[in-house]
Length: 239
Image (cartoon, rainbow, N blue to C red; front, top):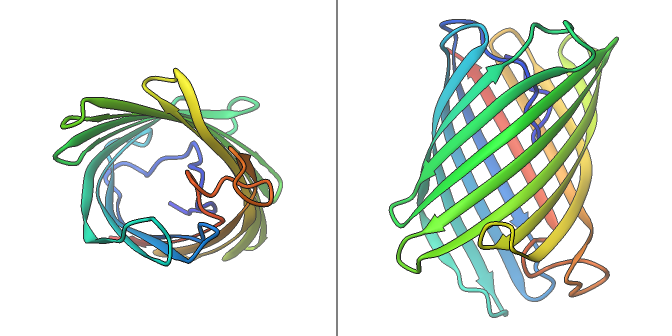
């Protein structure tokens, strides 16, 4: 399956019995003071159960390097193991918009996360546009705390030729105490995406810069709950 976005899923699923390996690398940088870098690799196996139903299992890792600020560093470790399910509701171009449903369950020993999404896609000529509506609920067992988040992602890509596309992606992320009781912080990001794809391989690169956020810490940005810059690459290999 060709991937043209790094922040949004399209509504399309793998063919039945298809198998893919994906390697994600996400970097989050700059808290406005000192040095800060968070690295989040992810290794994923996707399988097409049917032409409309795709499942995946992946391992999420986390590392934080920080100095000259109050943010603690964290050594490289496995943070969660995730199970993903995507179901395409219609055939491509059957209606004005192609919809799909997504659900993800993650477990990390001391926490469990639930993440449902609504995926919307529209293709027209050499353009493809996407919108994802994302809800996330995280329960931490030792502290008996619950956190939640809502994310909106948008993307528009243009196919330059059969192997290369370029685009622009946007995301707004909002974090809450308990289950959407009180908003703690929010931030909006925008940036370019480049995707190369062949028959058995694709590679996506995206760079995001925060353009606004709150509570404001510096230059109209939220640098407590979010970072100033984010970089993501995705390498996909058909097996």
